Length: 280
Image 1 (tube, one colour):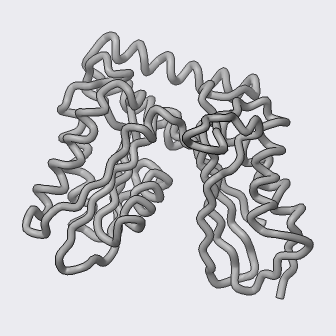
Image 2 (tube, one colour):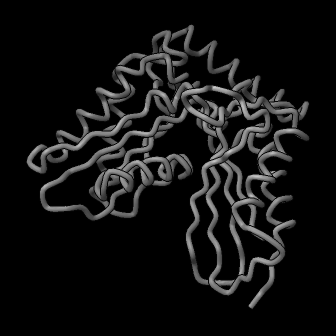
């Protein structure tokens, strides 16, 4: 049994918070460059050039890529051979968020009560997803989720008979309705199956997958390819000002579901598709 202290967890989450907000992932920046090569709109090209410049400046000057530094979503893969020592696991993660957002000079974007709307002034609480896995390590992934793209996400129960065509229609309708409000070019996470809560969970997990990595099941990979092509035919374009690159990537995840149901969820991630992982 390996001991990992809550202080180690707190400090790791703290650093991940500001690193995720400062340094856009390599696959996303590469996605900008690839989009720039194919974009047909002159204005769209100009916007993509600005996004690349912004990413370079943020990394060079250690500053947030976007002013909306998000609500902090934390994925924790905890090894079964780990003993967490010295305190409460989730409290350590929240303290890490608090520490990281203060020391990284990141905007506090969280209200404690959704109706009273009083800012907590430390970006807590975060949203924590914990999974037990084999081994004696903890993998932490921080996903700062901006409000604009999250607000445009959606979920629906389809009839099983609507099948793949119904799934595609719902995804395309959701993205078309979002338009420029989701700050494209976007990354699209699609969840299919499970229950009301599970389908939204896997849709959000899908946005963590790197650009260029297709689903291991051929029929789901084909769905991803078709959706990316059709999303980019919508003409929304970079920042919603028209063009051929509305999405950088579409990733889908599936889960078993009830015979009477076909739940679908779309989790939209804006061009500030930030994510950062660390293994303790």
